[in-house]
Amino acid sequence: MSLPGISPQEYSYLQSATQGLNEQQLRTFLMVYSGKRKNPSDMLMFAIVGALFVPGLQRFIVGQIGMGILYLLTLGLCLIGSIIDIVNHKTLAFEYNQRMVFESMQMVKMSNF
Image 1: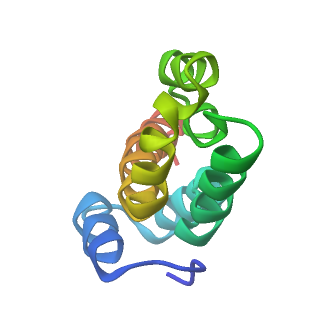
Image 2: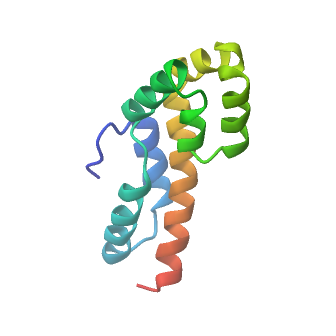
């Protein structure tokens, strides 16, 4: 699995999630997942831009629309929430990627390869 910026935690999660897939299913999964996955370094960039210019950008990117609107209306929860997101950018990316693993697995299983 050659994904940019993959952490050991994410790698082990992917290994456990893809157990039992044949070679074709694994290739299809990796193709779908790599298109949906967020790199932690990209999340750091989104969090910094969110703190400086567009509060909540990082939350919109990971699909947390409600939190994104809250950050936008409260200027990043008075900048404290944006700073916390900068510190926790790897966690934001990993939680988002976990959801994308689940969605990608569902797509692979429904495609019946």
